[in-house]
Image 1 (cartoon, helix red, strand yellow):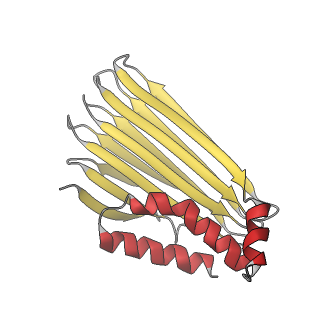
Image 2 (spheres, one colour; image 1 turned 135 degrees about the horizontal axis):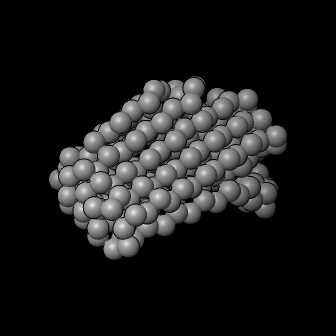
Image 3 (cartoon, helix red, strand yellow; image 1 turned 45 degrees about the vertical axis):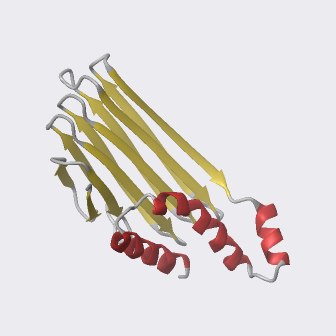
Length: 199
């Protein structure tokens, strides 16, 4: 049984992975620049980091995650998804650091942002620092706009523009939400997402 935990990121945090862990970031009350450093200094442990956020008009988010592998045979997957509405601003730095002693490590980062509004800013910086050749590591970062044809289709079925956008956004988050095995945590995050979408 994997450990599952919500981590409210409102200040800088160093988190030591001592067992297989699903770490779900709560970014909904983050207002100042923050950093999460995940330390792997015990061999054989894994962590799935899941982060989701919605920025409404004028909101800003500035955060950094660092997966630092210091021991062998560890693994980490960082999954981050965000939605930007009018005049919102996000900055995300996602780092993977694999030290010399961390052979047979696997570490990946996937960052996806969906843009709904105008005047948005999105800065994404994936960083790899690898000091061992016997590893697997990669990162990906994508930013895309919502499909206006999909909005038009849903509006033709009687939905308002905001209702149509929310359905598409819920689909954008659904796959990641479903990867949260702990039902209580999944419901908490789903409620927070819904609250932000309906503001």
